Amino acid sequence: RRVYAIADCEPDLRPLAHELLPDTNNLLAKLSPMIDVHDTMLSLPDVRELHIVAVQGEVKELLVKMSLHEGEALPIGRAPIHAVNLTNGGQASTLQFTLEEEQCISVRYADSIETYIYEPHAAVLKAGAFKSVAHRYNLSKLHPNSHIYTSSILESDFPGRTFVVEEIIPFTSSTLKRLSQTVPRASISCRNFPLSPDELRKRSKIADGGDKTLLATTAAGGERLLLLLHKAE
Image (cartoon, rainbow, N blue to C red; front, side):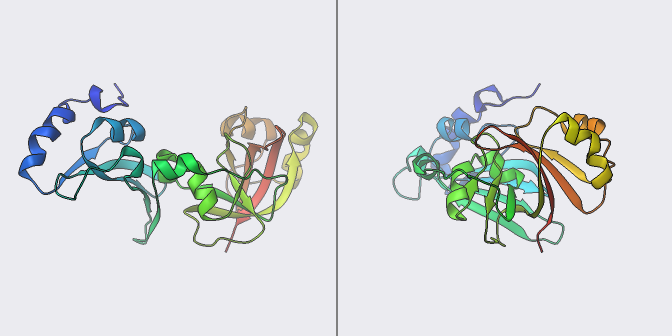
């Protein structure tokens, strides 16, 4: 079965780490991508770094570094977390932050959809860096639970996918019935939305493929929206 806490894994890394740490400069543990980030930081001793590694948008593993030989133990909230996505071309898109930083940031919510839309890569989402990524790149968040961002100025090094907004479409039954006439083919993504991508595709009759993306999401005011997008250059 799937496990989400260190305590549920076999063998139990918690006592093993205490036994091994005095005899090594550094201890690196490779953990399942299902393991909870915050629980890992709380459960293991002398955590110095945590790396969340995704490959082409899919989280593959968590790597946690522990050490007794790098000065005083770091408070849990101050150990750096690295959210990394590796691409086919060997490039790495990385966001580094701390839990303390994430907790202290105030997020700006968008009054309207601007020129660009940003979707963080899977490692950033797994890390829970929802406010840190907005602050770092000066972005407005669409909704507390959407984890989609917008700006009027392109942030080309954003750790994830970046789109240009072509059209903002209100989500209504009448709109869905006519949508395939103007958008016959598109990729579909749903974030904080009552329908799954498959359900939305079935109801809209939009074929898969093409260079457009239809992002279904919820705005800060609670409005359900369909955003017709194409990738930013």
